[in-house]
Image 1 (cartoon, rainbow, N blue to C red):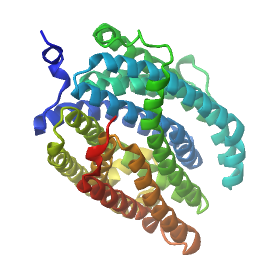
Image 2: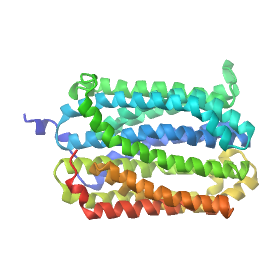
Image 3: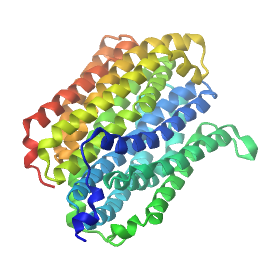
Image 4: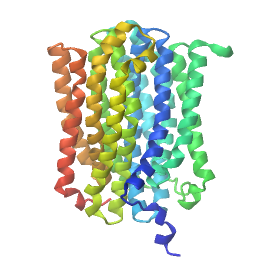
Length: 452
């Protein structure tokens, strides 16, 4: 039997069924940690509104480092999908081995930066001494889960890139289940466990990430993927392959850093307006996280499928594929946004705050959901750019969009001192910018000359 026939399952089609086959398992997998994240915030809100606001600051700060793993994940996923489209399974194992080295290198850097610079940064940026102390203590514990998170993400990049996204859910389920349980017993000291308060959430996160990484690699071994692709036979450092992964991933890492760094600036400016706006903004971030998972699953699908299709030599089908993914993403997001706007109080009641909190938050929800509709389109086109392999263009697009976004939020929050609703209108401007630049690049056809 030929290699092509033996591994034909590595190549994808461009039907809606194929798109959903890849995207839905990713969305179900991503749904679990978002539910977990919201549950975590619900537990912390029981400690007080200050703790809920602090959770927003620590969440965004940690997200800066966590999303470095997303950049590595996206770069590796695109490369694996390209080799899958080319029917070169032996190269997939080589790429995977090198990605572990790179992931651990970045994780060590994240831990070092957190211990050396996070206290200075937070103390010089935040006004509340209570928020400062809580945030610093939390991060010094939670950051030790970073190597585990990166390894977990590399495993998931392999599953998506080889069209095995249906197995992702198990690791996420274990992670979420453990995290929710440990949040409950460690934050409040139930069932004989120590009462750690705010730091209990950090300890719970590290433990849950360890078991999540263990599960995803257990699946890889159980399904014998490590034998089929030679995943653990190419662990010695290979400079050419390591350089390829780094070249593809580093622009994406910088892209994520810029994006979340700008969001961190947004939260710092919000914190300067008081604890109520910060707590509301943290709730809005949860909405983006929970209801945006379907968008991100389609975005991840866009990256993998575009790269796979190009690997098959079907460059003429790329734009049609992107439009199909975009339509599915927008339709699903529209119905979710409609649901949020019809029943906003149901979601906001989860935080256990008074009626004034809900009344203040509802106008912001209206604006956030409009931004989510823009996100459902823009992320598909941006991740299609990733799938073409020209990740430097991703970085340039992000720089342009972030520049526009940063100027806007500085003017609105620092100079004009406008309301929280106008502050969150920045999302419309950001996603519109990403879409326009990504769309123009894909339509130009310049990506067809890129070889990875």
